[in-house]
Every structure is written in structure tokens, then in C-alpha cells.
Length: 199
Image 1 (cartoon, one colour):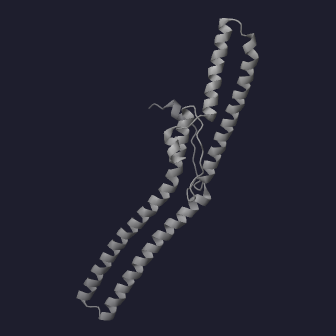
Image 2: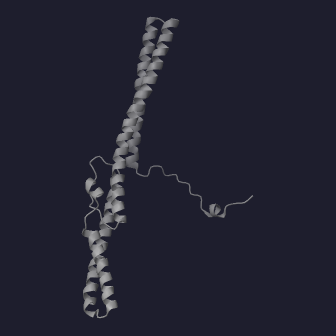
Image 3: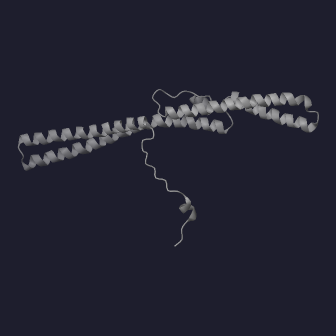
């Protein structure tokens, strides 16, 4: 019997924290529970009314069979209606989460291409506000750091230009100048067309 040394060297991590964003998770857990519980209760009340009506008419085998069939139809229709309501609720929920994720993916693509995106606020009912705020703050700090580096690079170029008398030194100044131009374009330049459409 052989053991994989890489697997045995990895520590076993057991994650037990289920409420990572308690406000967000609790809000939607309660909404789903209310929808599910309300739907089951509605079907139960309708089934109880059918049962009461059958008992009031007299419990003959025919009326019991008819009442059972009616309860079966009510249960089936209630399950279909509940599935539809939960699907619509899921669509709204995923839209409120997927929208910010989609926008942040566009922003990450702009950052990967060497540009800083024009950040826009989330829509009023969007989720992930805390994460988006942290993300926006990180992008702002990166932009500030890039601007500071561009400023320092500009000062270095200005002080080295008078001293660059050889072709190698002038070539180095041109390389530093192109690096400075790229940094300035990343900070001040336009974003991609995809970002303009959502910004």
C-alpha cells in the first residue's frame, strides 16, 4: 500500500463557519424560508378545506376518492407554483449578486490590461456592497501608488536628461520616458469600450 506524500503533508482543514456575511445570508435564508413555509401552509390550508368539505357532505367512498384526487391536484399545482415563485426569487437574487460580480470582472480585465477602470457605484438593490467597497478602495490605492511612481519617475527623468550625453544614456532616458507614458496612460487614459457601457 502506497501513500501520496503530498496529500499526507497537507494539513486537514475543517471549515465550520457557515455565516460568512451574516446580514446577507440571513436576509435571503429568511426570505426563502418564508416563501417555502408560506407556500406549504397555503397548500395545507386548501387541502384542509377540501377535507372539511368532503366530511360535511358525508364520507362516502366516492366523495373520499374525489376529495383525495382534489388534494392530489392541489398539492401538485402548489408544488409547481412554489417552484415558479422560488425560481423567480432566485433570478432576482442572482441578478443582484451577478451584476456586481460581472462589473468587477470587467474592472479586473481593465487592470490586467494595464488600465485603471472608471469606477461606478452599485445599483441601489445590488448585493456585495462591502466587497465592492473594499475592491474600489484597493483600486483607488493602486491608482494613487501608480501616480506617485509616475511623479517620481518624471523627476528622475528631468534630473537625468541633462546628464545623458552618451547614446546609451539617451536610450535609457527614452525607455524611462516610455515607462512614464505608460504609467500616465494607465492612470488617466480611457477605459475599454466594455467598461464604458456599464460605467
